Length: 255
Length: 226
Image 1 (cartoon, rainbow over the protein chains, first blue to last red):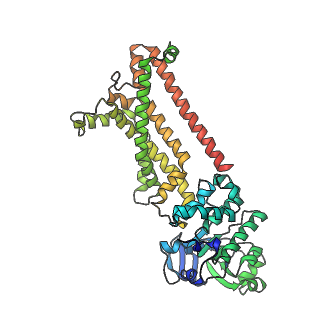
Image 2: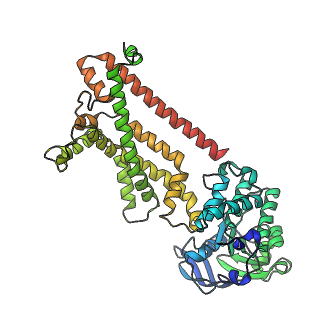
Image 3: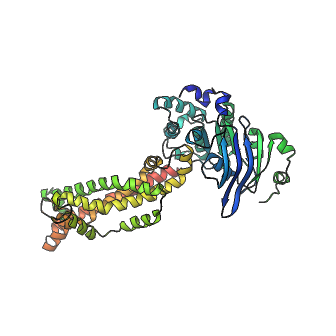
């Protein structure tokens, strides 16, 4: 692996990123005891435009992200990356950050190093990259500290730089700032902007309309397991197409 | 008199203490080498009969030492399947018996620790592209403080048991006589000073082990919640 592949250095051609994108969903459903918790006939997520997934609690947003990232098996349907189904090489070009950061019981530095090692990056190339990511996440002074002793904002920053460590083409974010204060949220958003600038496709769940406006290229609005609309960002907030989205934005949509 | 024995550095007493430590520590090392990977595999594995196996291993934590001693005795005795090895009434036989006794304890505690950690880690490790099997070393390493507790629990069990080692070791002076078997023998002979001295040392070891457990508990608690 050469240094040019790393997101921080920003060097990646569009055709490389295009290999696992667009992400195409066909006839996907996830059914638990007869109930279709996710039910999506067609969905295309293209490179470049950050996608913000919105919708009421229980709409199936987290399930959709987990299905797309391959953390749970669909009950039926296809998920295609480019024109291929999920495989280990394709998974290694994706990453995910969870609502509650999962930090390993190791030092901050070892957490990042672990992710790079999992991507098969050689030890001698990892050290420099880890330093770079620590600086990016403003965690350099905590490098040797046990990661779980940090604040939740710092832990989420660690989870995010760890996720972008190997320059994923596709990054799933499940409400990464929902439990953070405004300052911590701002730092996370800056890191996300950086990943977007480096060419990473973002698919992110958020309940924060302001955040969706700041980061979003398009809004994917979900309700009762279905994608109700997929609309470019400013247009969604100014004039949502669906009645459900109008109700949601007005704060009167119930599950 | 008992205190005097401890303080005077009575050679016989310390030979017995050292043999006890040697046998039980060796047994714990082997039990850990078997029990930890087995417990971890049981935690992350998905196979039919897993629930039953977990129940069985948990039940084996309470194996009666005399039954283990009897079984190992039958295996090692001259007419037993392993009789040719001539291991009966040697420290090796006592180590084997204690390994049988301690392995389920370490395996069961490891399974619990790894299963809890796996519940937290599995999605993240899967996201990293780490397979279920390949996640075992990660889980064992990250569970290291809790697993140390499992080791100490196993050691506590081994050093304190008398039933198994007396059957397979035979309590032979200077060969297989350990603290617990000596206490049993000396008490029946009326030599209470030596029995009490060894009893005191055994209790001190138990306190040290439990103190270590407590310290580890507080340290890992601090690391997790600070």
